[in-house]
Length: 326
Image (cartoon, rainbow, N blue to C red; front, top):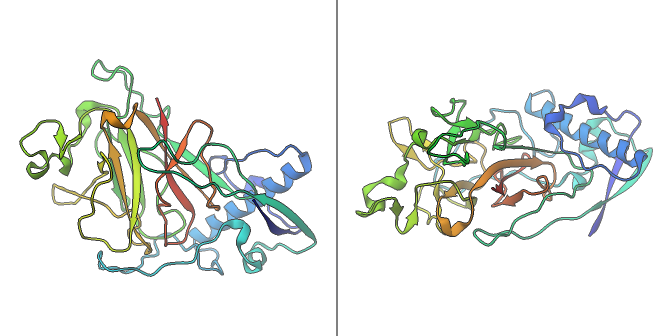
């Protein structure tokens, strides 16, 4: 457990400056502390929004204007941006906020460690300090109760990039996976309708190897049962699919599929997403995305944070896939 210092001034921005949809607050017991923390969270949220809109420059270089592209050949190691928890930013950022140093507030910071594919690990719900965070998920979206899927499970995941609309029958989880880091607009999408599932390269002949519904021993038909992400220093080359997963494909514009880099255009590590439909990975899941200004950002109770930071090495917010068992 660490103590982190924040300097608060008289001109802290009001909570109303940020949308409720962007903030997921954990209320302290003390009313005065509640008000102070809400103001700090709101200020962080507005700061990030203003940088993304091009109204401010981040003095630390962590956040950039939306659409800022880092050149890349898609294979070589890329430049990395600095990244800090909100509690560890130096006074240049707080000066940008217009904070003074009239009040010195000590806040407890509790990073959470753990997580691992297929092992039930990850980050549980709850927690939080002064950092702002947000969360969006598939839960209660795009309901489906057809006879081929009466429980309304998610049957497939795909990625949409560059402002493209989701594929027919797919619904977008409304969080940019490059949030705050520039690059391409990238979103996770899902479908619950088995008849709308678009078969990706997991159905290629080299993978199916003469079998049906299985790719190299992994099941590729049925409800989604796991979501995952991995980070690599280089891109373009074939990377082994973790466990029983296969990639969350994106259209390649030529009638086929590609494994999309979830840091595309933002620099940093090459990030790839994966899904599993294999019964060995447990019951079906709902999917979500949690984001915020702290590495300890956590989804609501009942959800599990999974995989790596989807902005790893690219600055911006901390962004993670999440899941919830059905």
